[in-house]
Image (cartoon, rainbow, N blue to C red; front, side):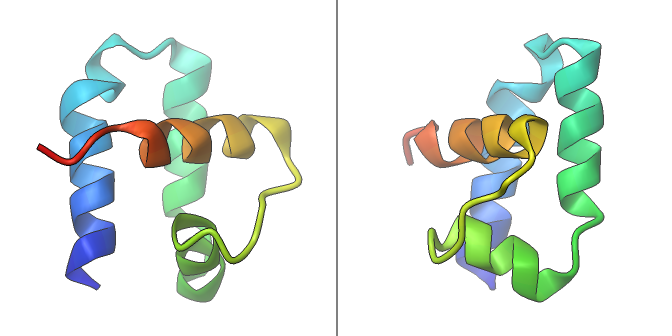
Length: 66
């Protein structure tokens, strides 16, 4: 889905460059999730149970669309 790609790109452009190494590792782990699971998180139909993934998903969803 293009909308989900846009969410990830906004995170990469605005947050990833300044993120700590552990947040970068968590983002990479999020990208490795199966598509249905990642889509569920980004569409807010599911909530990640792992703290580091939840932290990254929260930041991905909080970046405003410009």
